[in-house]
Image (cartoon, rainbow, N blue to C red; front, top):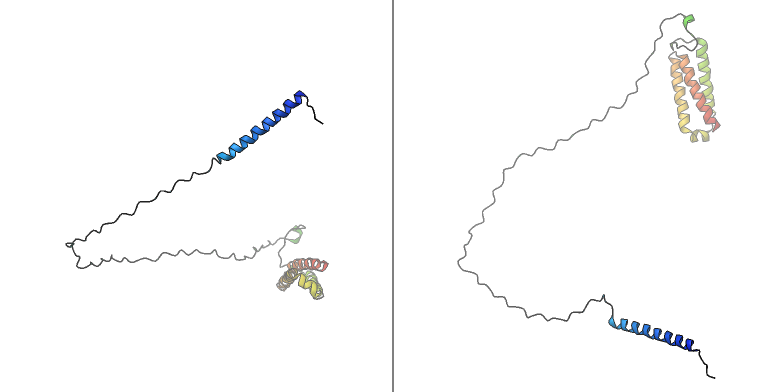
Length: 195
């Protein structure tokens, strides 16, 4: 059976065939021209044979140097060693004791509550309170478990330092200072025991 095509279809098929053929032809021609970025290969040019070098004769009447003179040494100047700059280290800050305040001799009725008094005025009652407070802190410190003492070494060391200062203040007659330092030690020890 022969297929019959409409005249418009026949024209479309022929046109498609013509376009395809021309596209293939262009690709074929492009492949024949090669890459335009290739460097051209230059023909080999042979080198000429090397030239002969003539020997130049050495003349017989060259002046001869009898002896090479020794160089004259330059005078040696004394070299001063470089000066070493020693930087002085600042003197370590010395702990200066706090200034001592001396209370004026005023009658006890003139002193108001909260007014400062000299530390030397200690009553036997305040000295006994300081002694009792120091003794109770020493007892609690001795009862502290070794595990807690090892974990809180810095704080236990500070408690001992406050106790030592409190005892020194008590021995010097400053019962109020001793009570103050003992109270600090007690608060720090309570904090250690809580942890």
